[in-house]
Image 1: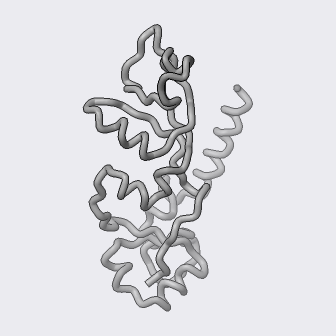
Image 2: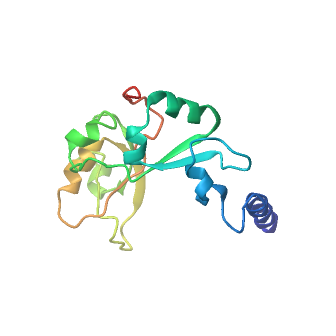
Length: 166
C-alpha cells in the first residue's frame, strides 16, 4: 500500500512539474489561442458558441496538434424511460444488475431477477449481482422511492452511432 502511495505521489509531482505559476497549461489564456505557440497547452479550450462558428478547416488545423475541449455545450433534456435507454443500448440485452434473491426464487416460483431498493439494508437481505435487462430495471424503478443499481450500462462495450462531424 505504501508503494502505491509513493507511486501516486511521483505521478502527481510529474504532472505538477509541467504547471506554469502553479496552474495547468490548459487553464492559461494561451490555451484559448487558435495559433500554436511555444509552451502552449496541448488542449485547446473554447466555448460552444465560438466552436460552432469556427470554420471546419480551422478546427482541423487545431486538431492536428492539440485536443479540443468545448465548454458550455447545450444538452438535450432526456426523460428516464425505455425510449431514452434505447439510445444507449438494446433494453432487452442481458446485463449485470444488483438486486436481492428471494426465498421463493429458490423454489422456482418467481422470476430470477428481483430488484430491490438498495438504500435499505436489513440482516436478512442478501444482495447479489445478477443478469437482467434495462427494461426490467426500468419497470422496477417505477416503484416510488427505490434506489436501484444497474452495473453494466455500456460505455464502449457496444458500438453506438455517432453522427459525422458537421
